[in-house]
Image (cartoon, rainbow, N blue to C red; front, side, top):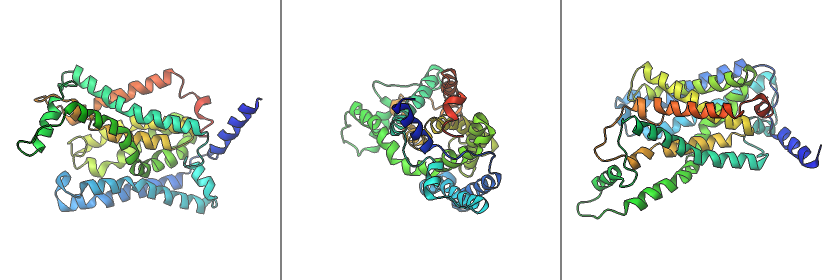
Length: 328
């Protein structure tokens, strides 16, 4: 074995979480109850005040809710420590994929790819929406965005060069991915940092699908108020479960391939930063498609996620040799 290969193998061993023989079901159950319970507790003012999505507290509550999986992760680790013995902090950080960043190149490279890939995924969904005739887009004149900005300016104030404004908005997406990272970390340290490795003994695909589906279900307190889809019944929850299951496979793939949670964090942040991409290119007077169909987490986007997953599978990215060395 060459020195370079030995060095790489040593780095891989350093970042690899401990091998779990079985799923730690008690900590998993605690994680599930605490994460969902806290989500409903944090969102309860929206229900109690009766204003729903019009409540001015919504942005703050949504941000606070994103931190609840991190709290649930802490509680699950404490419970696991009581059952199996406490672990050094370094082992806990390594198990969560937080530290050390080894191999650094793979972690940073995958994070950068996710930051720039997420706007492309959202954009692909918009292309499908346009091809189906559900909306009309104006990626040259930006007539819809121009109309929106004009309505927000004082009467008589000239419009800025809209091409430059749109370009600036697009260039801000990577910045937004970084700005969104702390809140995205609050979720990802739970879903991909702790839960995915905890479920890994079930197999790669069951772990990816179950962790993603639970991520979608966790959104229920907001989805049932009409968040994302404008639906206030179980249909909205099921759509969110489907979307998060598919999107979770993509984010989970980065965790499996790198052993690190950070690519998923930045990918999640970049996706959130790209959610308003359609507003930049929609044409004035365009029909407005149903959110459950054409929003960034609607059925069309689910189709885009599925296509990307199929391409990754076809490229051998989920083969055992490529993922088992990262999360055993």
